Image 1 (cartoon, rainbow, N blue to C red):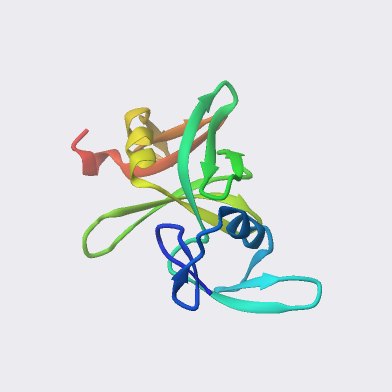
Image 2: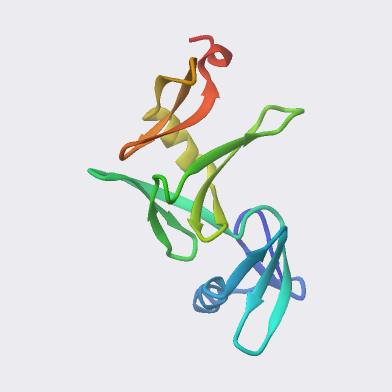
Length: 151
């Protein structure tokens, strides 16, 4: 089995077309070290994950923070237990934003949602460096140093 970067689940090279089956598998996925497994009481099967096992496909601004929803229906509010992090490609500088969904399993934040996050972003000082990022609840999540934006 394989999970593509866009969140599509494959079995023997064929996309799994039943959302219910994908949701079932998503509930038994586990990450041990750098490897992913589907774990049942009687079996532990390794799977390939191209990037992250989930994709955050939307978010809603709420009074208590930013609530993300994933391609498999998980909902989390970004904060200390569900931090947002952004990894930038060292060659291209392209950002890959993630939000922690459960245990050590993250969701890649899709492009449209990331652009919406940028629209609600703000600049604040973190450890004597000005950062552009987003706030959810009482937490601030840096995206990029403000100096790199020319701000």
